[in-house]
Length: 336
Ligand code: TXA
Ligand code: MG
Image 1 (cartoon, rainbow, N blue to C red):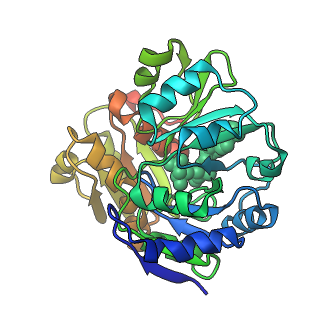
Image 2: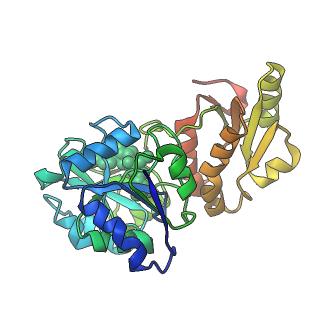
C-alpha cells in the first residue's frame, strides 16, 4: 500500500514530513519532491532498504544511486577525500542541482553506490527534501522515482503511475520547479568530467574550477517514452520536422510531435505537445518529461521531437539524444 501525503512545497509542515522521515529510518521507501525531479528515497546506510529501491525500479544492482544530504558537511563525512574543487562547487551551488562524484569512505553505504568505490552526493534545493533529510538525520539514497528506463517524474501522479504499491509513502509537494535531473560531475577524474549535463551548465563549472571535460555521452542513462522517439536536430534542413512527420504518417503510423511553441504553430501531427517558447529553456525543461508522458498517454506510436540549439539546451538535448531511437542529422541523412 502506498500512502500519499500532501505537503506545502515551500513551507512544509513537520506533521506531514515527520511520518515520512520515520518510515525512512525504519527501512521504508519514500518518494519526495526535489527541485529537479521526484526521488525514490531510502536510508543509504540500510542495505535492505537500498535493495528494495533497486527492486522497485527494476534497476541493475551495479548502477550507483545519488546519496542526498542536507548540508555539505554531511556529504564530506561520506567521502574519503574532499578535493578543493568540491568545496568550491558545493559553496556555489548547494543546495542545488549539482551532483558531485567523490571517493567513497564508508563501507556501509557501498550498496547504494552500486558496490563501487565512488559516491555521488547532492544537497537538493527543495524545502520538502531538506526537511525530510534533516528529520531522517541520515544520508538518503534516491534515484529518480520512475521505473528504470522511463522518463523521470515531475509530479506525484507520475510517481504513482510507475511505483504505486512499491513505495510506502509519496510526499506530494506539487510540480518540481526545474523538471530535469541534476548535473553529475565526476571529481575523481582528471580533469573533472560531466557524466550528465543538467541545470548547472558546464561553462559555469569551468568558471569556478578551470578545465572540465564536458563531453557526456548520451545513453549513459536512458530516459525513454514508450513510443519510439525520432530526434530531428536543430540544424537539419528547413522543414525536416514536417518531412519526418509526413513520412511516418504515410507509413500509417500515429505520430506525436514534441516541440517549441513556435514550431507547433505551423507543424501538424496527430497529437502535439508544445514545451514552451524557444527563448525560455527553463520552461521547456519543466515541460519536457510531462510532454513525453502525455504523448505516450495519447497512444502515439512515434514521437518526433524538435532538437534545440544553444548551450542552455545542453541538458535537454542530452536527454532527447538518450531517448532517441533515431537521430535525424543536418542535411537529412539518417543515423542510428
Ligand atoms: O536530479 C537528480 O539527480 C535526481 C534527484 C532525485 O536528485 N536523481 C537522479 O538519480 O536523477 P538517478 O539515479 O536517476 O540518476 C543518477 C545518475 C545516473 O546516471 C548514475 O549513473 C549517476 O548519477 N551516478 C550515481 N552515482 C554515481 C557514481 N558513484 N559514479 C558515477 N555516476 C554515478
Ligand atoms: Mg533516473
